[in-house]
Image (tube, rainbow, N blue to C red; front, side, top):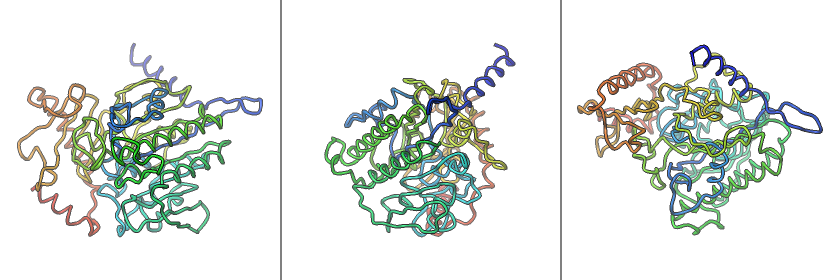
Length: 460
């Protein structure tokens, strides 16, 4: 097939993909934009689901979601920590561009997602009803707080991780000045997030909606709902994952009950890899762990009956920064104007198992470029080792190149065997460092300054 024919075919496919779903309502065929639900877990590892290798507990509902949908095996969260990852997912931009590229927002940290940033929720308006239920962690001081300011019509949840104090539940609605707090009952928390999401879905069944169900589990400490406590051989962590599985089952049943299943894209994923507990599924390292995949690569399942094929596993590289452009394309909404997006529309990956639109995905540890992932290769230059902090391998004479198809665990560098590939990826790495250097923050909150100075000293 020549290039012109290929491009024509892709253009035709894109037009078909962007076409609204026709549904029969009240005896007539009407165009309907798809609904979007993102179920975002907190610190769920790549190996923490039955279909991804979990052995000590079962996740039948999520496994069924995978069988009825498409699994992206090489999906990367936008960062290896919570705040930057969530910023990247909602904006379609590498988090360093948003000012939230380092560490997580702490209780006394006044940073927040700038209101100049366009979130998925804002980009889908005015066509969509939008809501976030669960963990926010993108700023809890005005003007970014509450999340109804950056585009959500409704918010019910917590401002940051559930291990941070003081902690309250908050509820807010667009156009209202009042933010209503209430006490936190930890074993009920995930149930409350889901109940509010289900109610919102029912209220908006007749119009397009976008829901982010941002569960605060299985982040430590775990607080399983009593019916799930003690039900697995994996302790409270496993109990909480089974609870999450039950919520996914309830969600899919509710969509079918409301006749919304064939009008709704459900995405199930995690904000980063596992922390002190959980399974990285054989991937190297964990949450916050430098450049290795265990901190970034997490489960990703896309379910959309009749639109996204069932039972397909796709290894095309995709990142959380791709969700904004993808959902905008599927909704027929324009991309945010005058904004540099790093994400790409991956609808063809989801619908047809197409090759990734990315030549590379840049991996950051805080504001430091630490790795470059292409479809086959991964070049890294940083990991943690004892008192050295973030270790630049190149400064110590090591070139770390991994063949991700042959060695997904990143156990053996093949730089010596493929010096041309190593040099090409090193050039990409240096280019990324140059590109993003201007976005590094010069004013770091005092709570993080000592940590940043120690890491900088380790690289001298």
